[in-house]
Length: 165
Image (cartoon, rainbow, N blue to C red; front, side, top):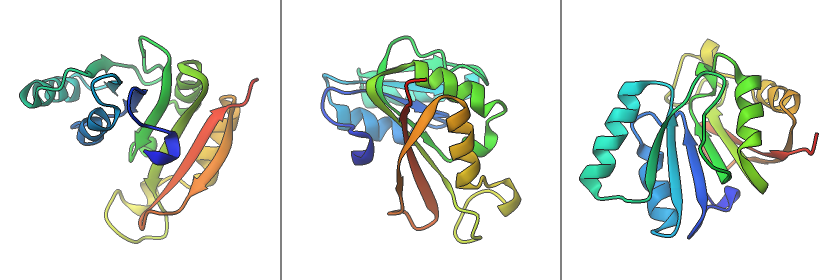
């Protein structure tokens, strides 16, 4: 979250939010003056997050049912977090292009995915995505790599911004 500048009052999207594990942490991080869009393309995940958010009494989370090529974010965001779901993307370049359009000026996209070295939990090695493929897809979508984070044991994190194309 630090690498993306996620803090009090920020508007952030959790793409491929799944059960909402990161959504909840993001909501706590941005506080009552911030907003989290929990996006997923599966209705049952959106329904699950909605129930969880209501149970926790969080008022700064909005769910969004996206598509394989468009997250359908309703407003510009400061940051987008995509964790452990890149290998499931059917149309990564189209999706990243639409994510880039959803960023405010200076906004960032953080993609966290499992490494291919075989260590740790996660999907089968053949399903993991090499970081260079992610960088190439992002470049094709008009995004520029800003940093590579290596603070995670079994994951890599790539941070992108709009390249201005």
